[in-house]
Length: 423
Ligand code: SF4
View 1 (cartoon, rainbow, N blue to C red):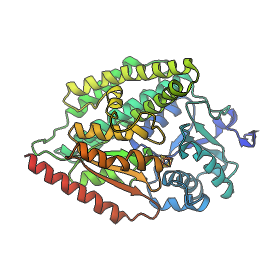
View 2 (cartoon, protein in one colour):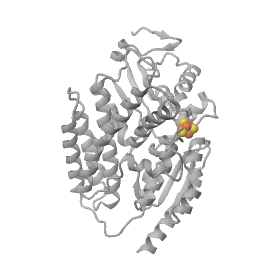
View 3 (tube, rainbow, N blue to C red):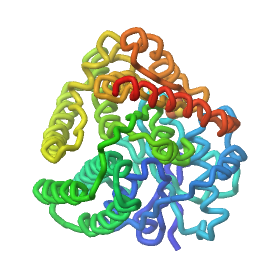
View 4 (cartoon, rainbow, N blue to C red):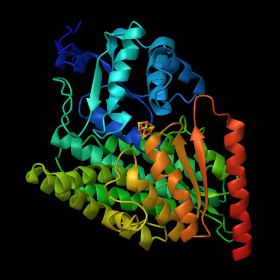
């Protein structure tokens, strides 16, 4: 049995625990987190992704945390406690992992809320690991080694690529279920991909991406009748998580739309870029700024190659980060980087300019950053782009699903009307 070690009252995840414990990972982005877990497991962790999508688990979050905190925090806390209490997991053999963005938002403080909730639920002996890029909290049993970091980078690229391919193929497939079946096959194959022991895997990553695109291209589709493109933007958790947004992607597809969800990597580049921006504006280590800029450059080189392959095969590759950043000009300052900040506005401009003027702007109720950079921008965008058809949807513990659906349906019927007019 692993010994408990504390640092300033914080229970550490020790090397012994790494051998014995299962690390539970909350589900946020279904296309990406599956690969993150495979990457972690290939490096000797026993990680498990929580796939529960029953909204009732929010009650566990509400029971053990203040009801004034944001919905994403309640859902993540609820998902963890629900898994430990109800799903037969041995509470003495699990650790939890949660991301800390390090920004000014409450997302940086979820970890403290989670520990408080565990204490209240008599689970204070469960260690909580922080996954962050700024060295906010350290644990002897959890280290992001250069190889794991590179694998997580590959996982992010594969997640974004898979999301693009599925969203651009599934609505048009002739034989229903073919896209999902291919996705499952590739997901299984990618588990093996992460087992490699080399530090860099550029060529393999490129080769696998090329093969993925080719296989999706082979799925027979019918694109004669166009479908309205609907973009999903907003707060990071409710934007990607089906648990957080009541299965928004599936709902929109059922309504006959093609979903366009911006890449998750853009959010991470934006987070690093925001730190570099702060150093330029307010001072700080120049070396850190240089490294952040180098990292963004490196990721963009890798992503550029994937975008080129996508374009060659007839898929819409999306825009480069630098170009995306410029789209915020004239609407919102790049210094607005709490929560999703200027990125949210830039994503909406990008969607409007690239054939998806229909947008669902998802936001947790009471999420101040998103009310400014998301909902707050709709009027200005409408003035600039009269064709934009944006609906802001609040996700709240008490928000009725019917109300959300009614608003989404209204936006979708406008989208169809606009498409008919164009025709
Ligand atoms: S962005 Fe909004 S929902 Fe997310 S942590 Fe901040 S306030 Fe909460």
